[in-house]
Length: 77
Image (cartoon, rainbow, N blue to C red; front, side):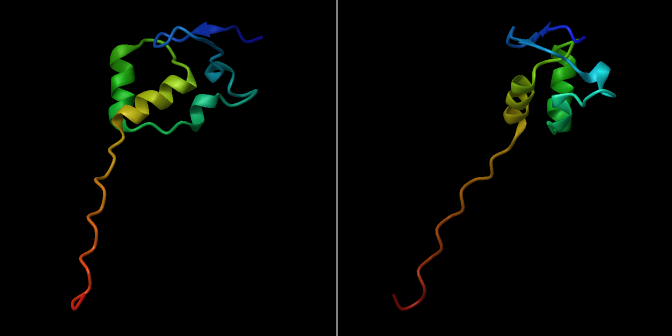
């Protein structure tokens, strides 16, 4: 039986299923992390964090492209 853990980032409870992945995959396997996010997690925490926190950390590392400049009007207008 899985036991609840506490997320070191938010303090919320969750169940880390990575150790029991043969029974069912852990939800964190579906979160794609950049190399920077993965390195930051390793640096800050020694245990698993919950899926919402994984997504939040990844969002900190995502680069939002600048908005496109409006196209100039066609000649003659």
